[in-house]
Structures are given as C-alpha cells and as structure tokens.
Image (tube, rainbow over all chains, first blue to last red; front, side, top):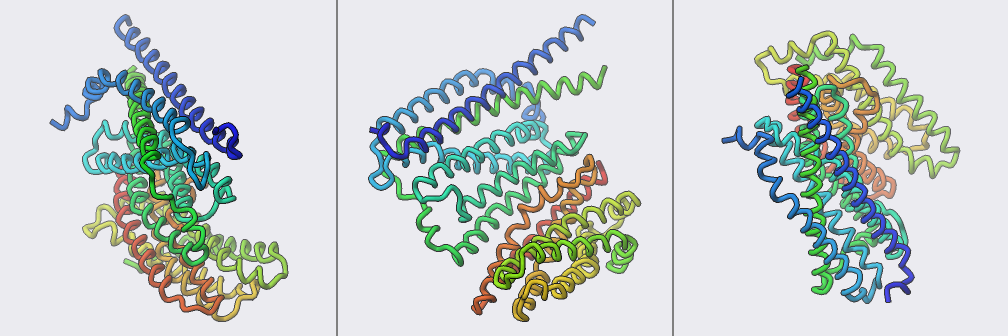
Length: 50
Length: 237
Length: 216
C-alpha cells in the first residue's frame, strides 16, 4: 500500500536520513567512549606501574 | 549533600546499572514506533502516506526543544551553584540537541515539499527552529573558543540563558512578522488535530527519541568525564 | 560616567572612522549592485541598511571593548562601588552618541541612493533609533563573552546575530507598512518593547560576563 504512494521518495528520504543520522551519531558516540575509556585505563595502569 | 551529587562516581553509580536497560528500551520503542507508524496505522485521508513523516519529524522537534530547555537548566546550575556535573551534562547534551534540530529541519523540509509545495518557508516555527540551531552552534563555538574549559563553560552558559529568553521572543516576532505577510501559510502549516490511531506511533516514537537522548547523553557524559580525568592526570605529570 | 565613556570612545577614533567607512561603502556597493530599478531599491533598502547597522555594530563594539580591556580599564570597573551594569549602561550611552547617531545620520544621508521617500527615511531612522540601543547592548554582551577567547572575528556575529533577529523583523514590518501607507503604531510598540527587553537582558547578562571575563 505504501510502496505505491507518490510520496515514497520523501518518506524514504526522511526516515532513512533520520535513522541513519541517529545510528551514525550513536556509533560515533559509542566509539569515542570506547576510545576514551581505553585511554584512561591505559593511563591508570601506567600510573600504578610507574 | 550537594558534594555527593556533583561527584562523577555518583553519576556512574546511578547510570551504570540502568544503562543497558535504557538502551534496550530505546531499541524496543523504536521498533514498536516504526512498526505502528509505517505498517500498522492507516494513511491520512488528506496527506496520504506522507503523513507518516510526522512520526519522525515531531519527536525530533520536541527533543530539540527539550534538550535546549535541559541545557538552560544545566546552565543555571553552572552559573549559580558552579555544579561540576552540570557542566559535563551541558557539554554532552549540546551536540545531541543540534542533531535533533538538524533532523527536525530536514525531515520537516522533506514533509513540506510534497505537502505544501515548498522545501522552506519563513513561518514562525521553521524560523525559530533554525535560530535554535544557530543557538546550539553559537554555544559550542563559544565554549570551544576558550582555551580553558572552566571559563568557556561559564560564558557559554550565560549565552544559553540569554538564548532561552530570546527563543520565545523570536518565535513571537516571526509569528507577528508573518501575520502581516503570509497569513495563508500559517494556517496551512499548522498541524492537524491528532487522531487516536496516529497518537500511538507518535507517543512511541517520542519515547524512543527521549530514551535515545538519555542513552547517548550517558555515553557522552562518560566520555567527557574520562577526557577530563585524562586532562587532569596529564596536568599532574 | 558617560563623559568618561565618551572620552574613551573618542580615543578610539580610528576604529570609529573605520566603522563609518564600512557602513557607507557597503551601502554604496549594495545600491550599485541592485541596479537602477527604483522599485527594487526602495523595497530592499531598509533591509540592507538594517543588516549593515547590525553588522557594523557587532563588529565594532567588541573591538572597542577589547582595546579597553588591553588598557586595563575593565579591571577598574569591578573595583568601583557602583554596579557594573551601570558602567555598561554608560558605555552603551556613549556608543549610541558616537556610533549610533552618526550611523543613523549616514543612513538618512545616503537614502537618495535608494530612492527612498521622505516618509521612508523618517520611518527608517526612527526604527534605527529605537533599535540601536539593543544592538549596542548586544554587541557589548558579545564582546564581553568573548573577551578571553582565542581571537576569531566571526565568532561574535555567530553568537549574537540570532539574538538580534526580532529587531530587523519588526523594523522591516514597519517599513513595509510605511511603504503601503498603513498605520504602523502596532509594530512600533513591539519594536520598542523588544528593544527595551534586549537592552535589559544584555546589560544584565553583560555584567555577569564582565565579572567572568575579568576574574578569568
């Protein structure tokens, strides 16, 4: 039903943009968190050993 | 008591156990919202299937404004009580708010083209959302322009509060400006009254967006706290 | 107090002159670029004059502040018993006299470039007169917020321009109504109240910003 709508491209564009945008932002946030906790763990290990 | 509030360990103690739950809740709400929005609900008799864009446009707009209100509240805490956790929360929230604003503008634009024939009009709501984007950008630019983040956050918080006052003023003035020029577009662009069948997906998506904000905020706050720890340790070396 | 501010501002005569030149030259270029069509000129002129007034103020005011800060004048302000907002008010007053009035006068002087009628010029000057205090106050706020930042000339307009928006919106409504011959008392009241509101908010926030900037 929806696939035949004349507005399909707008709907796809809007939903696609939103979901991809939200997903990409989440991924970026997640990986920057991973990197920062990695760094701080390395750092505290250095501190304890050094 | 306030000192306990402000310590990062307090933040971790509260958020670490609930974070997985929040994440799962976000996913579930998105799934439910997308299902009911795209598949399980009927198309609008006037707008057809394009009305479904409302389910991702309106929550984005709501969250864009909510995050700015959140930022305003945090800025108040920063300026009046120098609350350290508020500083971290504020800085973490700004990019998310900007994201929601951009999504609101783009989905709104994509909704506007098939519905009312234009990607953009200078009506009150669109203009004030655009201004909101500039306010987010201005906050970030001001914060980053200081080499010392402690100074930067205070200047930026002040800007955020001035922005909170200005947002309704701008909205009011553009409404007024538009009633003079284009009364027709105002009535055309006002949203239709909500049907119950449309309300469910809308609420579900709104919830999904809200918990998305919470999960991303927690992640960004953790990141920011880690970075600050590193910043301090680097300084102590 | 105002006298002191006037003196300070006059000492920065070079920057003042640069502001006037910028305003005049830009207006001249715009009128040239629009072409000879009188109707278009008449319609677009108020917008251009207003935008240039905003830009000139937003670029010049923080510059004056930075120069004064370098001279150490701002630290003295906090040592005074009187509240800093009073100082900012006098600074705004001095700016209105030395920057604002000449700009408004220049705008009126250059109106023949834009084929404006006498009513138009009167209305435009009135809107600028009402709006300029707000522009000056916002410029002061912008300058104070960015006093200790790494130098970046585009930062302040980015921050403050969105906040100035209500002013040109109302002013342009007034100009439109004047052009159509309608009674424009309603937008005038709105313009006055918005300008006043912005002045109060900016000066209030400005005194906080001053404290932050000086304390560091």
